[in-house]
Image (cartoon, rainbow over all chains, first blue to last red):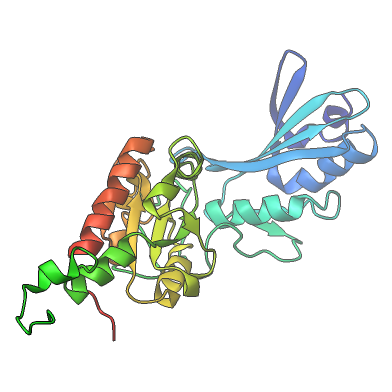
Amino acid sequence: MAIEKRYPEAIFDWHADHGDRTLVIDGDRLLDIARLLKEEMGYNVLVDLTAVDYLPRKPRFEIVYHFMNLETKARLRLRAQSDDEHPLVPSLTPLWPIADWYEREVWDLFGVKFDGHPNLKRIMLYEEFKGHPLRKDYSKTKRQPLVGPQN
Amino acid sequence: MEPNGHRQDIAAVLKGQVMTTRFDKLLGWGRKYSMFVYPFVTACCGMEYMSVSASHYDLDRFGAAFPRFSPRQSDVLWVVGTISHKLAPLLLNVYEQMTEPKWVVSFGACASCGGPYDNYATVQGIDTILPVDIYIAGCPPRPEAVLDGVLKLQDLIQKSKQPWK
């Protein structure tokens, strides 16, 4: 496959199930690999984008991308790993404008920053909210009401 | 007064054409059959609310099915569904803009106590931000439970002291 040949050092692992491939990659090389996927391999749709917190595993965060090739109907998943407590991966908005809202959601709920995002601010929660509630170390009952009593 | 000048019993003279009552009771009677509802519908309970309002259960016969989507024209706030902390200020804003006297119905488990959502996002009962008159239990409530709630609210309106000045 073209990605392994081009960026062998950036691929940590891979597996395939019923023809749908998953690649575990280095988050720092995400933009290069995504550009290759779009411009040379025909993966023209960014279907979804989310993150997983694997606390206490190291590396802690994985940002998961689902791509689709509308010509061949092939699907491909990238799992970009980030070892940092405050992860930073390149934004895919230059390649797929839809990444804008997806990346804001992941920033809002997981605290993953996207380098090069045009407007990285909260989208689901309110501006006053402190922390990122889908992180494993955020207590699920820690409420931050705008009106009414605190907890 | 009879032509011969004898005073008769007033009830016999009026012969059931006039009814006497207390002003409070009269106002309560009027108010309980003319509820102008503001439905604050956010979640699955909303489907149940529509079903109760539709012809089969016919909320209209209680004088309670005239939804007004303007707080200034309504006096019963139905909180139907989950309220998140992000939404709570808007709910409070609607309540504050409604005309007096006004009542609040908490429809279903989410509005009453947060329902299944014990998490960072959900208000654990709207009674933490505004006064609630009637709680309707259920997830979602059966239409019969909603009708029972309407009857209880009418009873509460009839029996309460009526502000009218």
